View 1 (spheres, rainbow, N blue to C red):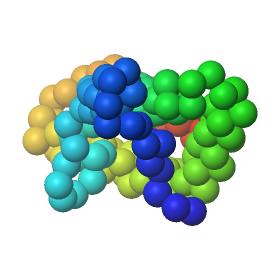
View 2: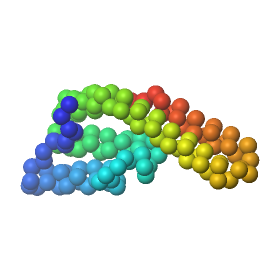
View 3: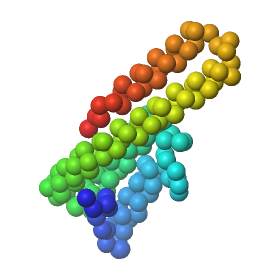
Length: 141
């Protein structure tokens, strides 16, 4: 599929203002972007899902602003997002599995460094990780 892009805005008057507003809103919704590496190195799956939700909303608002009330374009944009999200589902699942393995390895390393950590603390952390994993094992669209 082709990359996601906002529709063009005219470079004059209210259309220019709407375009600049959309650009700012998308930038704020996206937040910090890594130049290299994986976003999972700096954000949790919950944070990534929240960022995508903000970007998705800002994108659909930008489409609505550019189409001047043309509901068909807004519906098409929402449908296209669903197709793109479905296409990425497998990749998201693999990334989540890698993130979970990395977190478990970090947890094991912490436990090895601190053998006095109580069994309740370990069980509590494992339970938290499993709950987080279960929330992300089935993509919500």
